[in-house]
Image 1 (cartoon, rainbow over the protein chains, first blue to last red):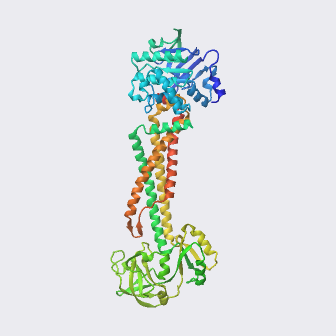
Image 2 (cartoon, rainbow over the protein chains, first blue to last red):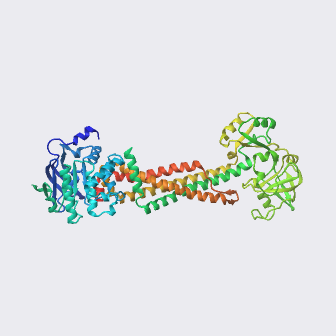
Image 3 (spheres, chains in turn purple, cyan):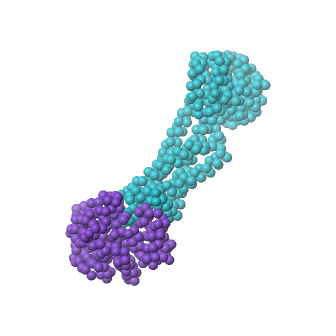
Length: 241
Length: 395
């Protein structure tokens, strides 16, 4: 994507993300369809910390995947800086994922044969940055995470909480506008879960990143600035916290 | 460039992540690769054995009279012209006759009676080097003859029973014109080719005394550069000497048929083995991709392009292929060295495998091509799969 293309998604005035009448239906078999999202609409301003909560099957993860262009909607649109991201060309979508959005997954999804430091540096290497430059930046991040002494450890040598912090570091390192966290605390104990939430909050305030957190645990969802409650694929409630 | 280096480093680390799997893949591919090298080497060795058998007694080019003549006309002019051709290293004029020999009251027919001048003959053919008992014919003793192994075998007991006439036996040699004389068997040759082993060889002048109708009926030619055989043949033909010129391959028609059949089998087996490598690589990469589909999803969610994903698996395959090629080559080399040290003695020659650099290079290209093709299909499918599907592991 060239600079002109980049500008399409660069921050401007108004909402960073606008979700308009979004729907997603999954085909479960011949003539059987399961609606996961039905007419979902909301806005997210730059620097917001939004949580999306709801029961299992309410459509939280589906919504997050659509915002990250991991999946395609059945209807409606998602605008980022007024640009419909699902109408981007394939190359632009790849660039969007490369530069503008980061994911934190439920299962950490670190690369097993890369050290903690190399896992954090990974997105930068993918962007085409040099080995030394990427590792220097990753070192800053790992210091911020408080895991400097674990830099050369492989994922299998780290606890679940440490692995998730490394995954958050990986999301932070590439200066993306938006961090999408899908149940990042689901496999962590309460203490580690709170640590991850604190870390995301810190990233939100110190680095002014827009964070969308999906969590089925109300306790964590309430730690955000705004909360959307989904039920059966529809927005049940929107709250400023 | 930085992206490419990263891709290479990622692919290498990914391929070597599971050492046991790497060893198993390299081992299985290495065995398939060595099978290709060894089969080519065996069939190449077989062809070489047949070719050597013919060249050893016919040289590279053979000059014969036109079909309506028994002898080469203007032999001196032909000799003079041959002497002037750059690529000719040596040549020998031969005479032939049809006949047989009498031994212990029985008459045995020879394939042909061959008259040679030992001095010139030894510069071209290797018949004198094929003596297994006694000595080859010499210019000094005109009454000495050498006979082929099968002919000698036929003179005692039955053919191929291993019992043969011994040297220094007196035999009566007879030609079709009714002439005959007594000769001494000075040597027995085993040329490891069908026809020469039925020959009766004697000094050229002596044969011509018995029957000179096919005097100077063949000139065998040894070339300096065998690769220029067709050009040299044309050069001789252009001299307009009223003669036939043939290559050893054209002369030995049935050998050529066998060699073509062997070539066909070699190509067929190599195609099948290459196809098996292709399938093997496809299956390996399919399994690899299936096991790593979540990783592929994560990479793509971070912005990895389809090219990057395809590149990973193609480069991984190259890593496997390089190690497998080295392993396959080492296995082949060990077999080849053993074969050279322990050639198998067959009726038609001493068989050993051959090391042909051209074949090794073409195998390298073919195998890497098969590996590349085999890895492309599954990695392309993986790259094209929807990210959400690979992350969820639903494919």
